Amino acid sequence: MILYLIRHGETDWNKEGKLQGRTDVPLNDEGKQVAEWTRQALADVPFDIVYTSPLQRARMTAEILVGDRKIPIVDDERIIEVGFGLNEGISKSAWDANMRNFFLKTEDYIPAQGGETLEAVLERERKFLQELFENPELEQATILISTHGAALSGLLTIIKQNPIAKFWAGGLHKNCGLSIIEVKKGIPNILNEAIVLYEV
Image (cartoon, rainbow, N blue to C red; front, side, top):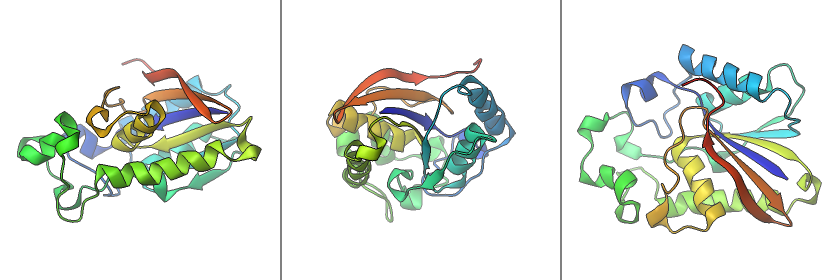
C-alpha cells in the first residue's frame, strides 16, 4: 500500500491568516491552480481510491487531482480538520496564549468552546488508518488522502508514533504539500514528507 497524504489548496482564509477549522471555505483561484499543477505532476500515479475530508476545500482538491480519471472519491469525517470552536475565523494577531499553544506547545493546548481536543483528533484518525492498514483488499492499493494542515499532521504523528508534544515535528505542510507513505504488513514507512510538486 502506498498513501499520498495531501493538504488542500489555498483558500482566502489561508491567504488572510484566519483559522478555518470546520468552517467550510472553498478554494480560491490560486488554490485551484496549485491543485492543477499538482495534478499534472501526479498524472502517472495509478490511484485506486481517494479518501477526502468532506469540507469543500479538501473535496475540491481531490476532484481536481483526479481530473477525468474514473477513480472513486470517498468522503470520510475522520480526516476532517480540527474543530476550533469559537476561535474559527480569527486572525493570527488575535490569538490568545492558549491558541498559540496549539502550534508552539501542543501538549498544553485546550480548545475553545465548541472545539476539539488533539486527543480526539488522533483517536478518530487512528481508527481511519487502522481500517486502511487492516483491509486486505487495499494491501496493494495506491491511495490518495485529501485533508487539512492539522489533520495531516495528526496522521503523521500517528505514523511516527510521536507524542502530542511533537504534533508539529514535520512542520505545517504548504497548500498541496504532500507526504508519501509505504505500508508493508501494516507497518508504515515515510518515503517523502511535506514536499511540493509545483514552483514556489
